[in-house]
Length: 102
Image 1 (cartoon, one colour):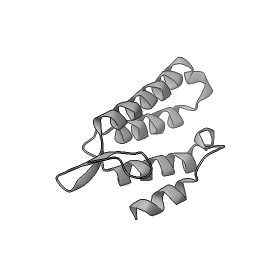
Image 2 (cartoon, helix red, strand yellow; image 1 turned 90 degrees about the vertical axis):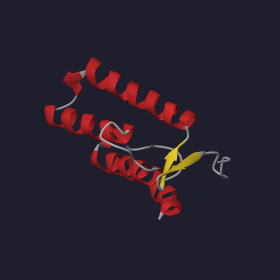
Image 3 (tube, one colour; image 1 turned 120 degrees about the vertical axis):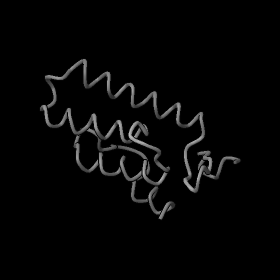
Image 4 (cartoon, one colour; image 1 turned 30 degrees about the vertical axis):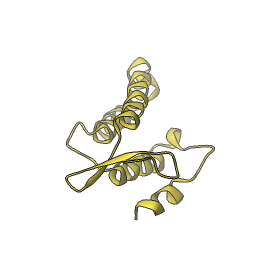
């Protein structure tokens, strides 16, 4: 499918709107970097945060089954509410992004 007005491309597979291969690759690179930070500096995070954040990253990456773009946005929104260090300081608020997928 061609890119939409927000320059995000997606595919429709079995009724799920999923990220294109390029966009999924970029997301996976960011997830990989988050995991590197977690495991290189585990002393900075309480054990329960490490465990929960690792589970969220696995879910976001689709390691626990297919996830739609909407589900990925919901996961990111939940993560930014749950983990203060993941709150964006600049950019578009997630509630504005989520309104597109509601």
